[in-house]
Length: 346
Ligand code: PEP
Ligand code: MN
Image 1 (spheres, rainbow, N blue to C red):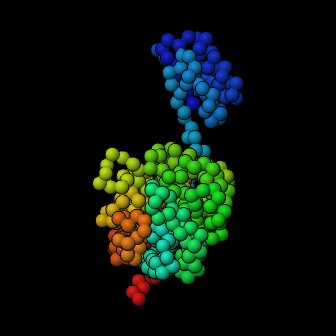
Image 2 (image 1 turned 180 degrees about the vertical axis):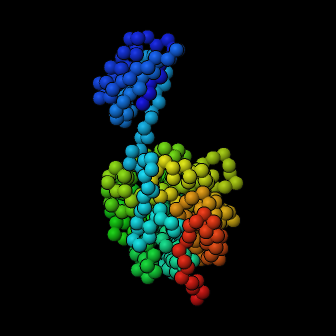
Image 3 (image 1 turned 120 degrees about the horizontal axis):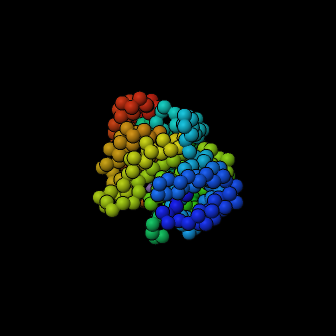
């Protein structure tokens, strides 16, 4: 950390800062330029986070040098990490496709969707049981019944499953029932939930908050990693901007930036970014071109009738087209989506 002093800072003010830095266990290295004085703080700068240096008389600015997310940061030359969910690996050469309905609505719907997306190359089945909805009057998921249906779909198709936990209490409910826990965008700052999810030892799919900076996103991941659970996959799902022709703005730069900042795998959810069906495949292609390790897509047999997120949900044919498009882009960037096992046309 570097403390920059105002031009008119007095020696007494500088000494007080040095005293406080040293009282917190760091060494202070004073450097006088022609007009400015700076103090370099050598040691664990995180211990200076809350000691009020910026507010001390004579101080103009305090510049952190280290990244505050120690466990999430990608150290120079270190390999990207891989996250295993059953037999699926995020962060490897293959791009992982997660697909399924926004909400689990019924047994038939879930099983039909699971079969179809598997046939198209998806490896992970998604489906909300507990749904975060903007309006309390909207469909909020089937809850426990949906969890049981996810268990059945997993047994029938062999697909691993991911669903959202909205509260720390729901984490225990989902452990052993699904293969991966999703922390939704609205809960990215729910620190109790992050810790509880981390302590469960389950792989976690962490979505970026709609107004979260990437640093904040990585600090949210850090809450999980700090529990000792390193199985975290990050998901960019669009952020809120002034644009209103899309539901959110897909921050495509987040993909290469995160891949430089962190060793964790990064996937993209173009469905919630777009909020409209017609551009989901284009955004998916862009995400893969930008280096995403996976995609999460909302799919439903009758998308117009979906009980949540109908506007952005793809029908079966549209999902198949998306996969073809994304496969071509994946090949162009030296990656692949696992071979299809044949479309079930029954
Ligand atoms: C979802 O995946 O269904 C969902 C609610 O996403 P987000 O948290 O990104 O809005
Ligand atoms: Mn949704």
